[in-house]
Length: 368
Image (cartoon, rainbow, N blue to C red; front, side, top):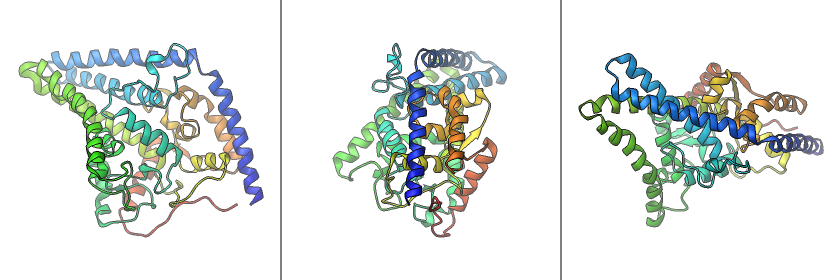
C-alpha cells in the first residue's frame, strides 16, 4: 500500500508541476486563438444563414447548411465549452469569454451546465451516485447503473434518439428537468434535491429559459424572414442542428465510454491528489485526429488531458499530450488512445453490451 501511495504522490507532483508551468504560459496567444475562432464562427453564420435564405438549388443550400453547422460546432466546443470551464478567466482582455457571464449559442443553460458538468462530472468522473454522466436518460454508459428492462434497446436509442438531439437532452439533464421524469437507475435524482413543486418549477424554468429563445430564433424567426421559402430555411436549421449534435455526441461518447474505461461504485473517493489524477486517466479515452478536426472537437480528442486540467485552453491540451503520455508510462498507467473510428466503435459496442443484463462488470484499477 505504501508503494502505491508513493506512486500516486509522485504522479501528483509531476502533473501538478506540468499544470503550473503550462497555465502560467496561458495568455495572449490563447486569446488570439479563441478570437480567431469567434471570427470564423461569425463569418460562417453570416454565410450559412444568407445562403439558406437566397439559395435556389440544392448545392447552394447544402453549402449554407455546412457553414451554419461550422458556426454551431465552433460555438459549442472550441469556444463555448472552453470558456464555460473558465479557461480565459485570468487572461487580460478576454472578458467577453469569462465564464461568469459567457452565453453560448447552444440550447443548454449555462449555470446548470457549469454546476453539473464542471463540478459534479469532472470532480467525480464515472463514480456512481456522484457523476450524473454515467447515464443519459434511459441509456446506461457504465456498469454502475443497474440494469433495467428498458435498457434493452438503448444502443438504438443512443444512435437514433440521443445523438440527433444531444444538446436538447443535455439541457434536460443538467437543469434537472429529466429528474422530474425519472430517477437515475440508482433510485436517486442527479441534479434536483427532491421533487417538490419549487424544485420542479425551478428545473423547468431553467430548461425553458434556453429552449424558448434558442429554438424560437432558429425554428421560427429566421424561417419567417424567408416568407414562402420558410420551409427550406427551417429544414437547413434543423439539419445543421442535428449535424452539430451528432458530431458532439460522437466526440463525447468516445471520451468516457468503453469496455476498458474505469468506473467505480458508490462511495468511492480518491485519497490523494495523485489518486484523483490516476482516476481521471483511467476513466477517459483520447483519440487521434488532425488539427482541424481536433478544433471541431473542442480539443476533446485529448479527453485525458482535459480531465486532468479542465481549465486549459484546447491548444494547450494538444501541446502537452506527449508529456502526459510519457508521465502515464512512467507511472504504469495506461494512456488509452486510438483512431476516432475504432474508439467510437468500441464505445458503441460497450453501450450495446450494456443493453443486456450480464450483471456488474465494473472496470476498476488493479490493486498495486
